[in-house]
Image (tube, rainbow, N blue to C red; front, side, top):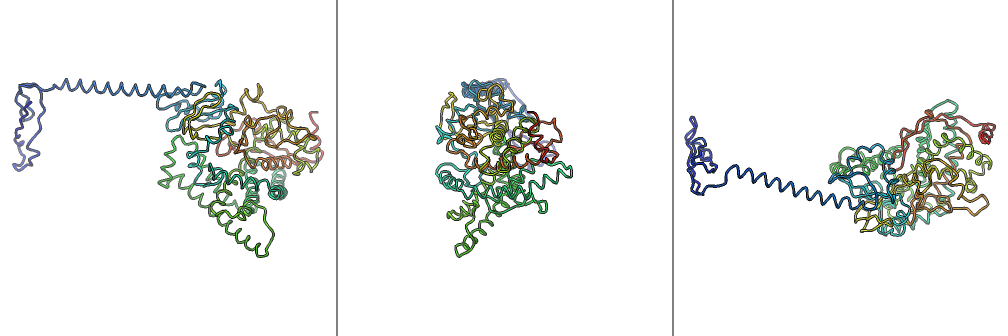
Length: 575
């Protein structure tokens, strides 16, 4: 087609020296004999070009083809998407967005929603795909749990997504590393936790903290008729204990004469922000905030700086003390920090390990005890049974050597953590593709989660009364007083993979025995002296699965002192 370009005369009033660009206009070609555009004209051509109608039709056809191609891609994606569920049920899912619709609808009851889905699945396993998140396999099947935590342990490390979330705070601490680094720390810490000196230190600290602070605080509340938040009280108590055992320093959280320690506040704030990191639907959001140093990520950086500075200062002070002891000073200290310094580890490695232990120990026991005391207020018959056991053995039962005789108390604590585990779920990330024993396909990089909260409610594991609080399921398998003692964290006849509250396999919690010692000591100390009455007895608290589980809005109670007669009456009533 021949196109001719003709100069357009300037419109009236335009300067004669108007630029060349304005004096020429590009004409649009059509098949009409002559198309006038303003003063520009295009003569007819003997070789007519495509019409506007044809171009419009071509454009429409291209759009249809693109739309069809997109539909095909979405269909292929959807087929692949659903193929991961060939071995179990799961939430309704859609191309691209996955289960985002149902996830949003159930965002305020995620734990119960997942539990319902798992209970409905023939294998107690579901696969969850969600926009912006990794493909996640969630299981409440003990056989799968054993495969993940033991049989194929090497294929299921915590993984980079997990370590990214906790890395700013925990660094290379034992709870945030895999492989050789984890193994080396595990070996060291296992030796230290088995040391008699550390166990004796824990019990001495518990006795002192209860005698000087916990009992007086509850006694004062009983005398005044004050309302006490037991969750807050127990968290303060646990923080004092773990700091004295790990760091060898007393933060005084339960001392009313001292201001609230900045270190405790920093741990609280950091734990809350990190929990929100883990719950974020799209990790890129918090990572962008961290890169820009804004909002909650800026606060997290500031809180971590407080924690790191405080722990490093203690390390330097303790190193000087160790130097003085070498030159004839005081005897060897038993706290964990001092023992690791003597092993010659670098300062930052010691800092990360100590912070990991504080994070692990500060809220787990307090969470379990909070739910324990609440459940006893709902089941006074169980409280009477536990109280008979505590008072029947005298003060010696609370001592470390007598705790193994507390079968009812141990059963009540185990039953509490079955229904309300301190850690609701734990996730690994598949290093390579795998197939779980129930047939569920796992792809490389998948998040694989075993769901303790749901496992505690599975009728397939615990029977038709799985939702009830009952000591019978434990008393039948806990040895009698004169029988050989069972490990305190997992009783005889019960697979730890059915009850992975303290994990299982190579990563079994090293502090499980210390945790039971603390929980039994606190429970017996409080129940022997006080009766707790919830302010709102009809309230069913909300279970909040943060880094460690919390009771929504705490446990507000009034406290009543038990005299000797009242203790005997309470223990014997109902016989």
